[in-house]
Image 1 (tube, rainbow, N blue to C red):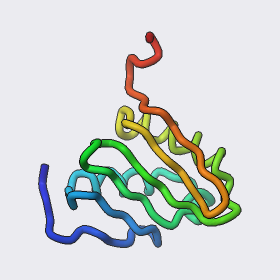
Image 2 (cartoon, rainbow, N blue to C red):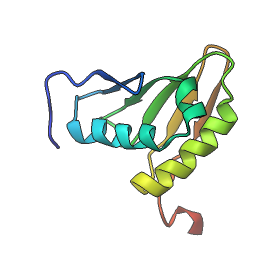
Image 3 (cartoon, rainbow, N blue to C red):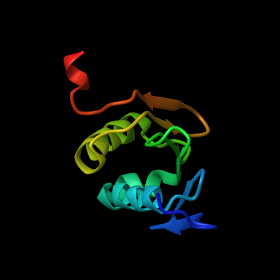
Length: 109
């Protein structure tokens, strides 16, 4: 994994970061954000990847955001763009939703 001293940054007006500043994770986050609908992007404040858990994300949305719609849009994007994830928390000031880890082949269990 490529590492950089300070990769905390803004991308399309969304703060993005990675626990260990891994460039590959930052690039993955950018691809996900780029794939979101304009409406979904307007609702997001930040995306953080937990490098310790790998492919595990915490996503902060604005108060009043449609978290259920965001959750399913993110589910589809992570399946298509990253092949899966180790869990995604989407939260706002008012509520939170969670996507359990999901990888190809999980559906057979």
